Length: 171
Ligand code: IMP
Ligand code: MG
Image (cartoon, rainbow, N blue to C red; front, side, top):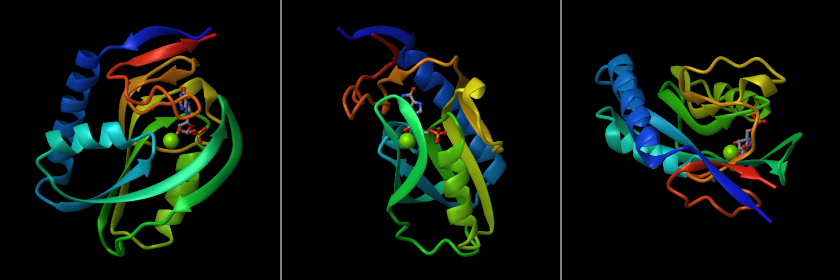
């Protein structure tokens, strides 16, 4: 039996995203940026964040997969490439969570090879305890303990993404 315990409710998530949007707007200060949403998990965060931002953005997507159930395999596959030319552009990666750090390390290297003018990273959640590789993240929504979460884009074998809140999945 699966059992859900709300960790971050909708209001908390949305109000923190408003704060992040304001911070991002202040930092980019009128620039035109490329937002790279990491499919599929970050789609909900990307939509809400960019709607709250005033910074002019072009939206692009990458898709990676690294997970099988609740365990990080450490293997990252790029399933969808960037569509836009990001050379000499200000790029903001928007990801749902940093856990071991393997995914963002891989994506950072992938994007840096394309010579952007700048690269920043925004994540909604940070599971600091689980880090295996050191990665600098510019914007963090919430630091959370080492618990598997679902909802607001987070899935368990591709279900639960559409919950408006983030919950701890207990078995
Ligand atoms: P990392 O490569 O270990 O940092 O993992 C990042 C990816 O793992 C994220 O993009 C998520 O898709 C997935 N992930 C990590 N923790 C969770 C979780 O608690 N729930 C759902 N997905 C997670
Ligand atoms: Mg993901």
